[in-house]
Image (cartoon, rainbow, N blue to C red; front, side, top):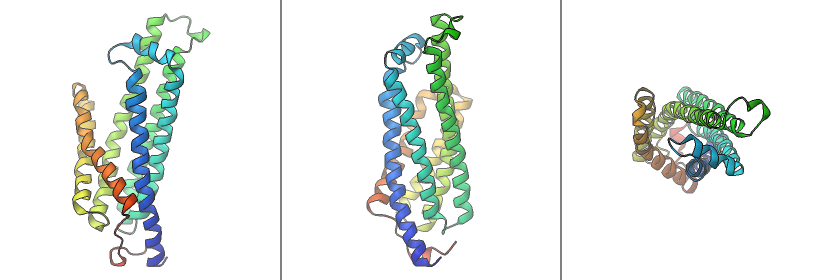
Length: 238
């Protein structure tokens, strides 16, 4: 593959990566803040169950939104690999593997939302449980999904840190932005691990996710609008 062909593929991948950063961020915020945030009541299983039963279609839209988000992340991972493979193929592949495991965990976590709906659908085989028990079981399933998302964040941060390091080495984007990406990605991983060890830190985790959100949105706009500063001297054929 010639340098010209490689650079053309990288340029297209950079624009695609920028778009997918922004689209995935938008769908993730919509699903988490505007759907689950309006239905799930912390510490109140019954109220949460009543909200889901009363707005089942909205809850199902949230599940579909999650599917769109995680599918978008798969496309993002592919685009970043195409962009950064010429910098260091082995490290780019490592980042891909870390993030694909992340996506696998997040896809599986969606099942718990479907399980929660199953507990609340009034099926005959659930008649041995009373309403409060079913509400509690549904809330446990939703909590399990949250735990799965947090587990995936460990790998989100690790894979993102490797991609950001490759961006730092390449000079494709401003070095300050890439360095911020390394920092914010490792911060996300650290906070996710600490949440497993110290569950009481849950309310604090959102604050530790803000730097990562700033990085991904800024990088998304940069790649989409300006593209990557690809030079022949900085990329070699894979």
